[in-house]
Length: 315
Image (cartoon, rainbow, N blue to C red; front, side, top):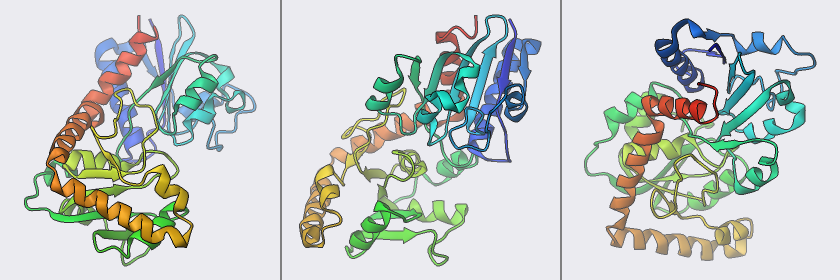
């Protein structure tokens, strides 16, 4: 058996490249010289008309491509926000005999329905921004006597900006836009600050899940967010791992200023209800367990190996 593994480590501490590199080292430790590494940029040069600069290219630096050279069967894993579009014929995917395609970001039931006749789609895990964030979370997770406020710090654009304009007027929320120099925090200061709060707000961006969801899960902060519709290998469930605060009703009224008092009252009532009940402690504990099972590198490596086994790449 000869396995060709392709990815781009890109730069130190970038989680995507680091987890793929750790997985490659794991395979080498088990299978030795049977595992060969080819940089994904070099792999792309074997094929004509492959635009590796495209965000939806199958040769994206967010991708892991593993091929059994004896059977020529290929497994593809993507951590790109644009991963589902890579199952379109134009991505370069037709250069491979793909036995399974795995991703999570923006993977919904509709996407699975659209592409499942062509590919075996395996929901996967999501990741932190940097590998060093794993240790930062462990260092900060046991902060005592947290503040009874809802914290958000992220780039504000589109709907996020609309939510910022609305929610920053509510004293329950501490809303920061990290594109603003006065709000930006380096990693150390960010984790030192975020862990002081009992609740964290997560808003969808380019993806329907975010680094901060995982940060909240790991730190023991209750994650309040929009409905989470993506598919993960270990399902994330409203009321079990997080609480939907900004539902479809609120979203439908977000840009109607005459509805803002209604939105604010609804949100405040939901926060007060959460505070009056101890159920959220169980949600925090469930989320932490999910984080341990799905976000620690050792367990992500186990998941990747199980995907290879399940689709017959490793025999």
